[in-house]
Length: 263
Image (cartoon, rainbow, N blue to C red; front, side):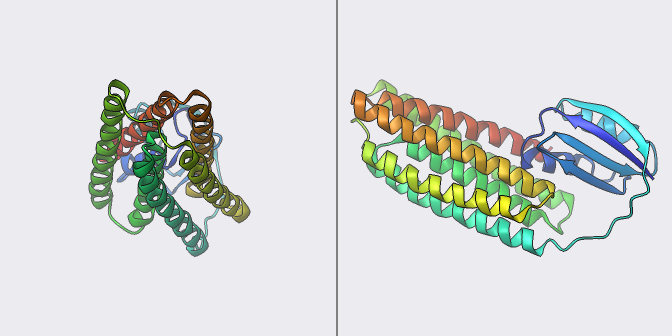
């Protein structure tokens, strides 16, 4: 058996992992082992690596073949029940925070909170897609990816248009107290999720990718809190609109990644 190491510079979340798995559906290999934090893919195979490497290269993710070496590793299918349970917990936390932030953001006139809520929903979609895809054929995975991607893109476009409308209009200053307090709740929720994911000490690719996603959410939460503080000191809507724009662009980027899964 051979083991080939492929460095993929743009592989940093579950979207790229799913994209690669779907692209390689039908290719001949023994196992794919993803190391997302280090952006490495280890392919265990019997035949030539060329067709597999060319298929990955077609995705334009910055793939580079590092080396191919002989391997005598034998695989035992692990029990993923604990990982699935943990992913369900993270998924439910994301959905709960989405509802809380969206409703509060709407009534407090904060696009930062609304954007952060849709970012939570985007993450939940990716987690749900990964869980649903287990045991299904590639064609069904791609249909689910397409629906999820278009839905997420619609949310992002709605948010960007709303930000522009509020930027040009005479909107009231958002309620900074709601921005800060609700974002603190979201920060706590994401911190708990990150703690649970790290506590699992799982080396599985989807678990490591979930840690990266949740770490990014923590940064966004802090961004909304900072924006709320600036709203307080400036008595202006613009800090809120700025953070909202940034997050909506991140949601749109995630939608593009998911839509690539459907190709």
